[in-house]
Image 1 (cartoon, rainbow, N blue to C red):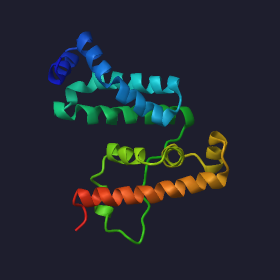
Image 2 (image 1 turned 90 degrees about the horizontal axis):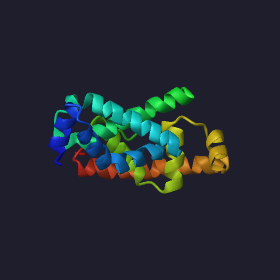
Image 3 (image 1 turned 60 degrees about the horizontal axis):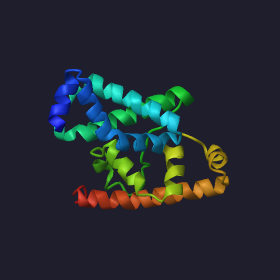
Image 4 (image 1 turned 180 degrees about the vertical axis):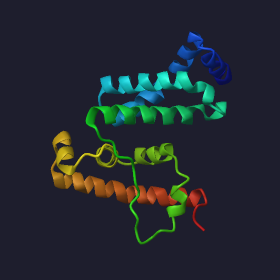
Length: 180
């Protein structure tokens, strides 16, 4: 089955098309959900809620070629909704201003998926601490307890993640001609 056929089938509420699409994107979407929930049951809940939203709103998809990115955005929103309902808080990434603002205009063009791809490039422990702090809104004391590390180690991982993300972001901006 082709993507275009599956999309048309899903618009018509065809269960075979929905199952095909689910199977095609299952691994990518469950991996994304696990990255933020760190629990298989919660990841499954987020993913299934996300797929329900995909099937309900697939008629709004403008370009079949952007299906994957469109689904990731819906999945990300599903994860955010779940975490917000569970903890009452979800923080989204905000880049801190610095004296070097030559990249700030380029930030506007970044999508969540671009930022998530950059976060995926971080070393595992630093990435986990960054996600807990910057996305989930945990404090260093909470992260230390969750990860069985000291608060100082949590702060170090966050600082390392920020430093590496700045470098990754600078390269991204250069490659995508955001820098003059």
